[in-house]
Each structure stands twice: as structure tokens, then as C-alpha cells.
Image 1 (cartoon, protein in one colour):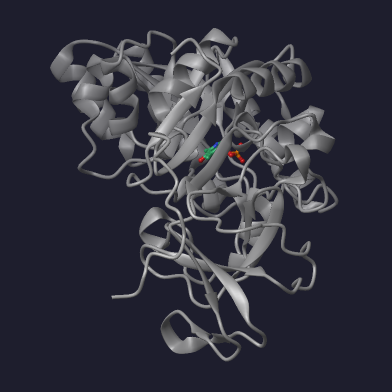
Image 2: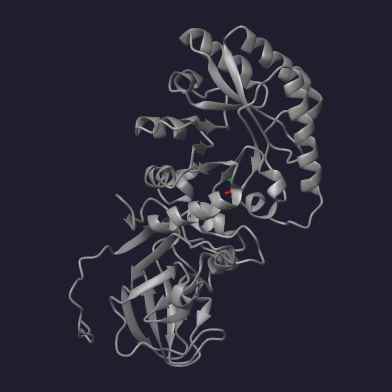
Length: 397
Ligand SMILES: *Cc1c(COP(=O)(O)O)cnc(C)c1O
């Protein structure tokens, strides 16, 4: 047996790995975005467990910070909000024939309707003898959900006829933008024009709309002419930038999630040491490796070798393959290109290792992991798995 060469630090009884969610950052982001969107109303989009931040905690923070609406993709998510006691309007917009429309109507969840859902929603309303609240969705160019322009008048007429029968109320009309994150592209103008046309058709059919809405985070920030009566903001709540060329800080936003763990092993290796499956990294000089105990089971993309990990104020790149539970950083002695020289005296065992955070002190950002993985900041935070405990700071809870 090899001798125990490093003193093992006493446990700090912190969490071994955690996603720290700063609810005060979320509240401040919402206040900032609400000011930009005003006088339009504000829907906080909390689908997908609030992009990995925790749906109930984020929704509470959002409502307290003045969000008038909550938005989810699935009815099941909307029902979870109602079960948690939220009474503000909730809109859910992505359905299948197996969606529980009856529970949705019974719980006064507003339903997006692109066409086929209308009969299902009406059947639920009949059964419950309770009018459904619907938002008709027009496809203005994204080519995903939403009613085609050719079918729009027919859908508008059918919905208004059910409204006259007391089975539903058309409270909203909405659409979704395809390229709002690239403000120079002309397609957004075309989508907004088609949206205005669709509103005209629906109003001509007799609808008195409470909310007309099309803006997501990038449109809220870059296109005041897209705000209409309400904006639907997801990414911005969480303090992340939807634009390639603008940082959170430049937009006045603070990233809310910090992903951190502790170094699980620190050891000196000779030159020629291969690292992780495939031995894709081989040390060129004697160096010190740090084992970071998070991997793709925790939601870090396996492809993201080179992603940054901050230890004792210095950022190191992940070397070798990212595995299910762990990854390795090279703590030096030599600096890696683009990274500061090693600053870990003695053993780093137990040292806090930050994968990303709010960027204060020049710490690593979600966007660097997105670049390493060939994806967007949206995906990095949303896929942080349930194996990583969330810890909430800065809020009432
Ligand atoms: C997810 C989603 C949003 C929020 O988009 P962000 O870019 O995160 O603000 C808005 N509307 C719809 C229909 C969505 O699916």
C-alpha cells in the first residue's frame, strides 16, 4: 500500500457538489428586464425546471419581483405550479393528444392552441362545464408549432364560435421568433408583420384579446417593437445573454447559477502520463493533476474537454476525456495556453473547484463551457442533472 502522502483536510460539511442558485440575482434580473419591457406585462418562463434552476423557487422569486404571468411548455409543469399554490395566470403551450386538457382547464391553466388542440380543449370544457382560456398560436415563420397562415382564419372562426357557445375564451394570441438572437437579420421584421396581420384577422373575427405576445429574451432586449402586451422571458431571468457578442454584464444581468465541487484527488505525475479514457492527453512534463468529481451524469457534456475549472483563483482547462462521474484538470507546473500559471501550493485536495458562476473575480462562465461543447448557454444550465443538489441563496426561501 502506498503511503498517505498528503494531509487530508477535515471535512467542511458542505455539499460535495452543488449548483448554487442566487435568487436575489434572479429578482434583480427580473426587475431590470421588467423596466425594459414596460409597459408590457412580464411572463417568467420557468419550463424545464426553470432551465435547471428549480421551477418552484424561481417562480416564487419571479412573482415576488413583479412577474404577472408564468409560462411553461408542458401542462404537467403548469399543474405543478398550481399544486404549489401559484394563483397568477399560467400559460402552457406544447401539447400532445395525451395531454391532460381536463386537469389543465380545471386548474385554470391557459392553453396555447395551434389548431388540433381546439377540439380536445372544448371537450374538456364541456365535461367540466367550465370555459377554457386559450391563446391561439400563429406560425409567423419559425416552422415549428403554431397554425399555418393559410389555416389561420378558419382557426380564428372556429375558436370564436366556441367562445360564443361559452366553451372557451380567446384571451391571447402569440407566436415565437426564429432569429431574434441575431438582431441584424431581416426575418424578424417579417415575423412581426405576419403577427400583426394575424392579430387583425382574429380581432376582425370578434376577439377581445387580453395579451398579444411574441418576444422572447433576445427580442425583449433588442426589439421594443416586439413587446406588444407581454414579453415571455426565460434565459434573461437566469442572468444569461442570448447574444453571441454581448455578455451578461453588458446587458446588466447577473448569472444566477454557480456550479462547484471539491477536488477529489490531487497527485503528481511524471511526464508521459496519459489521462482518462482513450489517453487522449499525455503530460509533456512532470505535473500535478486535480480530479474534479463531476461528469456527464451531472450534465457536463462529454465533448467539453478544455472547459474551465477555477481552483484557488486560477482557471485550469479540463484535460483528457470527461467521464460519467469525473474529469481531470492539469494544475501545472506549466501554464497552459490561455490559462494562468499554477497557483496551487501543496495539495489541492478538498479545494473548491468552480466550473462556472457569476463571473465576478474573472471566474469561469457558462459561455466558456458552451463554447467547449459547441452549444449554447441555454443548454449548459438546463442539462445540469438532478444528481447535483441545488442550494438556494439570496432569497426568502
Ligand atoms: C422557451 C420559450 C420562451 C423563452 O425563451 P428565452 O429565449 O429563453 O427567453 C418564450 N416563448 C416560448 C414559446 C418558448 O418556448
